[in-house]
Image (cartoon, rainbow, N blue to C red; front, side, top):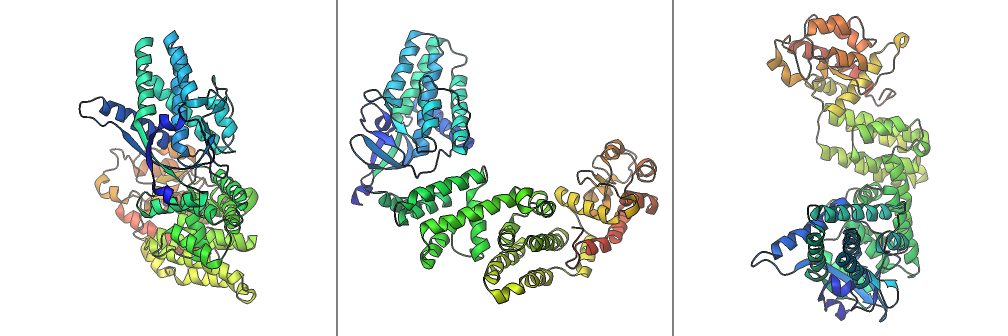
Length: 568
């Protein structure tokens, strides 16, 4: 372990170049190439910005890219335990310089391309590549990046898509940099870029004697402020404590599967929601420390914990994707309104516990209760979100606790309903709040569509498109609206909102209320909600808006009702 503190500065040319006889190999358990557009663009910006600064008098001579951690296997092979993303991206940029030079059409450029390939991409004496990625990316990276000339393959895995995107970004950036230059000047610019990449980008190379030492290094770096992400720290920890060590390949496989399922979603958010769903609020501890302590205190193995994560991840993705095949077409509309339309992410731990442990019918009932609660508590009454989260997080944990106990299990649904009802504003509080209710656009689409559906008679039932929200006093009022200044603050007030069909909504435009009422509400709209505006109000002003909100208040209390939430 002492050797791990003997860090040496190395440039990229020293690590990948022909003077280093050993190939750099990424262990099979490491994650695939994960840099996304923002990371690749930042890398390119670092290279070109340093190049510009270094050419000025007194400019910097070197640019520090960060640490890498490695273990020497033999004279022929070095295992790269941390630093894959940077070295893989550097290789992609070397390949972009090579391929761009090939297209310049002069012999000197052909020679330059040959030298890059020979010196930094392939080991000429063995024919093997200087950098070998892990099992999931090795062949794709070799064929589409390292091979000269590269071949075209459809990127299947997420990591392959990241590699393909990095190629596109870096190749386009290189070509843009030389676009206005003649072939000779363009070649000189490519050589300047190669020189910076090869010589001036420095990393602190930290040698370790074992992978376990590497995992300790990662945690030490994190403790000292060189922050690693929670998923990386957790995976490193799971690998380090894996017993037997043969479990590592299965852990890595399941972890890669989770990343594939999550796609572009943040795995840190999933891990946090999973934690809250199982163990309640984090309070003062950071997520990694909480996860690590839980694993150690419960004496659960790395493999078993990873299986728990993978199982919860599958259910979590079903919820956030609103996957009707898995959560059911009867539950999907309510989950979609909660998670997608209203974007109540804080409900996901509670949804996860409910979906994982309750029957499908009970799960649907709980989702409806959650919609009732968030509408009454947050949308209508605008109460503190931290209070809502505490209620949801506590319920998520309590569901798991009760479902493990045969006796407590019997009263679980009643407990959920009572907890939400007892923490919800009363009907009188709701009716009072409605009188002053200003809604966001997404809240307005949901609330007004539910109200319009409730008010629609059974004999004239029509499909109500939540997208067709209408402001009675419009967003861009015409000159016919003589009270514009007084009305403007009430644009998103519940009393000023209704639903119209799409054709009517577009045609109604910004007309004054008298013509608007005569042409659209009274004569054309199929919706009871719109018709009642025309019947009930001869003119439209602030008093009309406030009065209509009072008229709607009983409907609000009736729809978002724990005893009969069928209309949410």
